[in-house]
Image 1 (tube, rainbow, N blue to C red):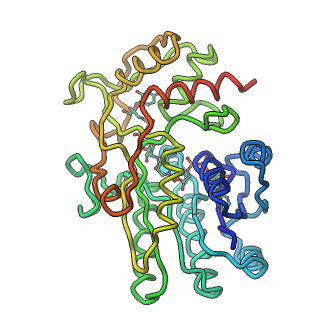
Image 2 (tube, helix red, strand yellow):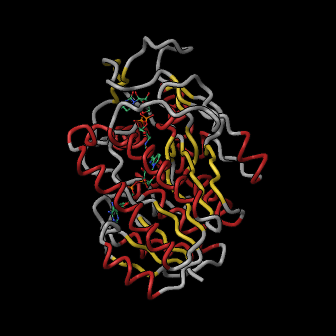
Length: 330
Ligand code: NAD
Ligand code: WQD
C-alpha cells in the first residue's frame, strides 16, 4: 500500500521519498511545484531504481485531493507541502495561513473519510518560540513571531484535536531543527529560489562563487563566539526519521524533536565547511537579523528512547554532501 507524500519533490520530501522507496514502500507524490521541479521525480528514480507516481496538484484543492485518495489505498500520509520562508510569511500572511492550514485540513478530511490512519506532519523547532534551550517536547509552545511559525502551531493544534475524537488515528508531529546537506549521490538537495534565506545554501553559493561573501547576522549574541547557535542535522538522517516514525506509529499524538541535540555556531559551521571542502568562505559581520534567536537546539532524547532514532551523520558529512550537490548544479 502506497504512502502519500505531499511536497515530495521538495528538499526534505525528496530525500524521504528515497528512503521510503529503499524501504520497499511505494510512493505517491503530490506537489504543485511552487518551490521545486518535476525533474526531481527522475532523480529519485535514478537513485532508487523505482519511480514514484507524481501528481502536479495543489494539496489545498479538495476535489483533486479526494480523487487521489479515491484512486489509491494509502497506508499513510507524510505532509511536507507548505510554504516555509519566514520573511515572506510576514509580507504575505494570508497566503501562508491559507496554504499551510488548508492543505492540512483537506488531507485530514480525506484521511478520515478513506480511513488512512497514519499521518506524519512536518512541524518545526520554531513552535518553541524563545523557550530556554534545549527545547523539550513537553514545553508549552510560546507565541512565535511570524505567521509561518503560527501555521505550524495551529496545525499541531488542529491535528491534536482531531486525534482526540478519532482514536484509531496516529498523528506524528515531527519538529525539525535545521536540516542541511544532501543525498550522497549529489543529485538531490536544497534548491532555493533567488537569494537563499538559510545559512548552508548561502555558504555553498559563496563557495561556488555565485555570491561574493557570507554576511553573518550578528556576533554579539550571548553564545561562546557571539554568533547564533543552531542544531544542524543531515537531511538524510531526517528522512530516515520519517520512515521510523511511520513504521512505529501508534494511535494518538506523538511529538518528537528531530535534531542532534548539539548546538553549532555560525562561525563553527563556516569553519567545518572550510575543513570539509578545502574551500575558503569569505564573510563579514552584519547586523542581527530581526526575529533570530541566539540559540536553538533540541533535547533529542525522547525519539532515541522511544523510537531508537538518532541523527548519526556528522557536520563534515553535512558540509561535504551539501557542497557535492551545489557543485553538480549548472
Ligand atoms: P520545500 O519548499 O523544499 O518543500 C516543500 C514542497 O511543498 C515544495 O516542493 C513545494 O512545491 C510544495 N508545496 C508547497 N505548497 C504546496 C501545496 N499547496 N500543494 C502542493 N505542494 C505544495 O521545503 P522543505 O525544506 O522540504 O520543507 C518541507 C516541510 O518541512 C515544510 O512544511 C516546512 O515548513 C517544514 N520544515 C522545514 C524546515 C527546513 O529548515 N527546511 C524546518 C522545519 C520544518
Ligand atoms: C541559521 C543561523 C542566522 C543566513 C530557519 C527558520 C526555521 C526553520 C529552519 C522551517 C542563524 C545565521 C543565516 C545568513 C547568517 N525552518 N545566518 N547569514 O533561522 O535557524 O531557521 O530555517 O521551519 O523556522 O527560521 O535558519 O539557516 O536561516 O539561520 O548569519 O546569510 O545562520 O542568523 O543564526 P534558522 P537559517
